[in-house]
Image (cartoon, rainbow, N blue to C red; front, side, top):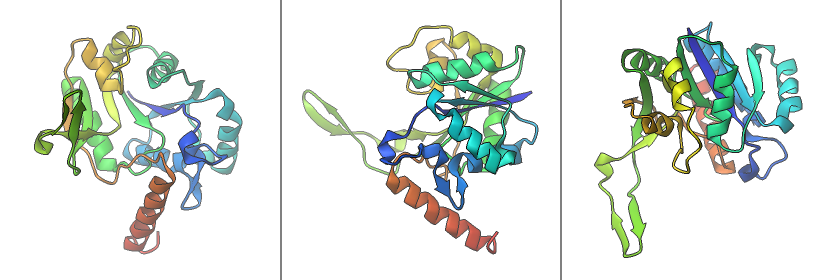
Length: 229
C-alpha cells in the first residue's frame, strides 16, 4: 500500500498575505489542489493524510467544498516543528507495512514520473530522496572567513521523500534534534541509508511572493504548450 503525508503545518507568514501559502490561488485553484492532483495522477488509490495547522481547518473545509476532488483520507494537526508534524501524520496512518511519501504541500509541480521514481526506488532500497544539482556557487562561512564549496559534489534536496512505513515509524521514535531538517535526516540518524534519485527543476517550493510569481509563469507556459489545457 502506498501512503502520502502531505505537510502543510505552517501558516505562511513569509508570504505577507492573509491566506496561508498552501491555499493561495494558482491558475484559479489553490496550490494544495495542484499538489494533490499530481500524486493522484501517479497513484489514483494513494492514501493521503494531510497535516495542517489547527487554525487552518476551516480554510481546508472551504477548499474541499469548492474542490471536492481534493478530499483526503485524514486531516491531523501539525506540531511545533516539521518533525512533530510528520510524526503526527505517521500516527494517523493504518498500522502495518507499506510505503509512505512525505511531501511539502507547497510543491505543486512534482512530475508524475518523479513521484513514481521515488516510490519505486524506496521499494527497492527502503528510502529514496529526490535531488537536483546545485546551480549557484556556494560558500561555507566560518570563524576564519569563507571558502567556496565544490558545486559538483552538492545536491539540493526535494520532496517527496519516500520510506518503508514500518521502519520510518521506528526512526521517528527518537526525540527531536536541531539537525532534523528533513525526513531523510531522521531516517539516517537511526543508522539507515537513503537512495538519491533524480528530481526535477520544476519541483519548486512556494515560500515567498517571488516563488508564487514563478509558479504562475510556469503554469502559463505549461498550459500554452498543452494547447491551453
